Length: 300
Image 1: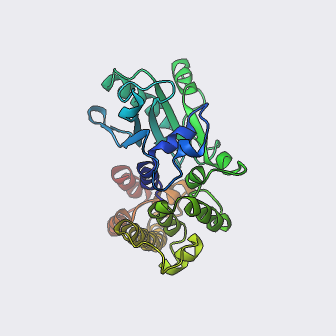
Image 2: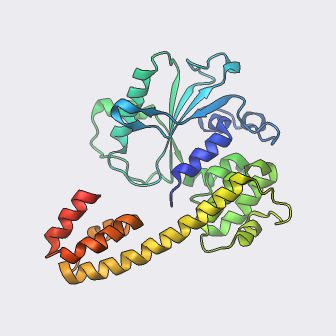
Image 3: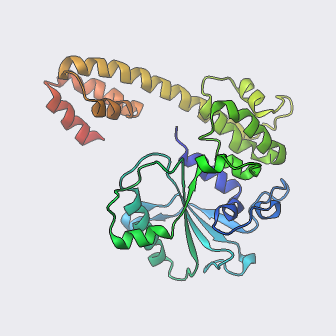
C-alpha cells in the first residue's frame, strides 16, 4: 500500500498537526485546530521540497506562519520541521536522513531551530545498520521518532492524531476510528475516504461510506473526494492485476531457471505491473538463472 502520498495529503490538509508530534508539545484542541472552520493551518504551512543537486526529495517541510514571528528561522515554540514518513524497511534510510537534513540546513542557513520528525509503523522496522558511526549516532539522537503502533495504543487519542494511525490499524478498528475522526472534523473526508479505499479495495463506494459512518445522501461530493476514490479503486485493481501477473511469471521462471530463492521470489512479487509484463516478455529468451539475475540487476 502506498502511504507516502496519503500522508502528504494529511499534512497538507492540517499542517498544524505537526505541533502535537513535537517533543514537549501539548496536544490541545486549540493547538490542533479541531474546529472545521479553522482547518489547522494557522500556525504552519506545508511544503514538499526537493534538494535538486543531490536528488534528495523531502517528504515534507513545515514552516511556521508569518504570524508566529519566526517564519524563516523557527523558534523553540515553533521550530521548522523536516518530516519523513518511512513505512517499509530500508537499510539506507538512516544515512539518507542524515544527509538530507544537513543538506537542508546548508540550503537554508537562516534556520535556527530545526526538528526532524520521522513517522514509522513500529520500532522494529529496519532503517539502518546497528554499527553506525559515532557522528551519525549523535545526529540521529536528535531525531524525534513517532511509532504509529505506540500512538494507536494511547487511550482517548485525539481524532487528528488518530487519523495518522489509519494505515496500521486492524481492519476491525477502522470503522470506529474513521467515524471518530469525521465526527469532529467532517472536512477531512477527502483524507479519510481514500485511505479506506486503499485498505478495502474490494468494497464498493457505498460500502466505504457505511464504514465511515457517512449517509450517502449527505456526503459532500467534492471533486477531491471523487478523484481520490477513483484513484484508490484504480490502484486496487492494478494491484490485483500485478498479483496475477506475478503468479504467472513466477511459474514460467521456475520452469526456465529452476526453483527460485525466497529473496528472488519476493523481489519479483514486489515489481510493479509494467515491470512484471516486461519480465514476462524477457524471460522467453532466458537460458538459466544467470539471465534472470542480470535482468533484475538492470531493471530494478
